[in-house]
Length: 474
Image (tube, rainbow, N blue to C red):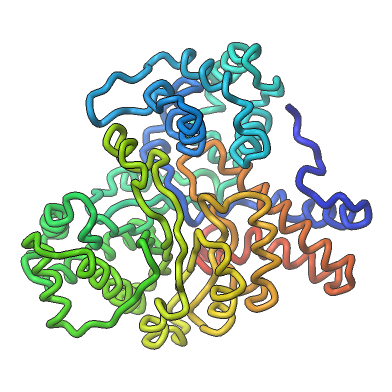
């Protein structure tokens, strides 16, 4: 269905009029996407997208987990299995099954994103229903067959200035090397990698010891000792920086940080390599390594992103049948004030360090996160992500944190998505919410129109570009 020009803008006519003017400034700004999970091979290879189901449904755990909650197994939606169980392979069958359950998404951000992807990206305004499933499928499939809908062409049409992907230190960065060899980043744009070391830091990660050995092979450094392990991490960080990385990303279960002396850290590392580490050891090592990574950031300049608060693979049956990252994770309460104190004591007032802090626990916005970001030079607040990435929470975020942290201790919007075609609509939602929030401040005579106009562009474009060190881009 066509998008209303007043989508998500305030309902009060006077405030809405101001919001329209502000959105007119923010909406056309280029996209800075500093955190996401698009596969860089998508752009490096620039192959046509697969059928609509494999593009829009199969890889989107926001969609498949909702149907699972209503008794539809992921295998019936084409989600690959890891246990050898049969999986539906016919795209049209998957699409019809999804359309039959479309009503489950009423009021959700998933519906908003997907409907706007249909209309804004593919030009398909037919409302999805069980009766129109084939018609919508055919319209999208027809677009996907056109050269203008290849990944690189869409990158340019989306006005993406920077797209950051996320790779493990074990990744050979071949896709990024191919993009560099092609001299391609889209007209005026570029694709960069992000250093995500969870699989070689978290002792509770499946195959951690083997991953650490592989880290040594990739880096050309012996990881048999803790000192060698740190050297290998530094070497891989240097390779990522050379490939364009400006940040690292850390998806720890908690925000805990800890300063250990070198001998104790080495003992923990050795216990982990020998398979003797328990849960407390794993937590202590993760916490210590966050401080180590902050120290490394002082040397190589990478912005440190921390994404705590997810209980991974909570749905154990789903994990056993389909593996990681298919919708089996849930948030949990997260403490920041005491957890971050060791890192902040060491480096929190050092302007050379930038830490972008995220949460899945919105109750901490006012109580912990905004006061922390408003009191330490190194800290910035990341946008609501994952389970909190919705119009309602984006609005509550501004209401909760602005009083203590202002606008300029926040880091701009991140789409955090694997769904490449949804990137522009997700950024547009955030820009509309910010336009509405700022319009209210103007209407209440708390902000001048000129200040609001400058701020809405800062939030959409200039601030993420600055915080994530993309100043050298177009």
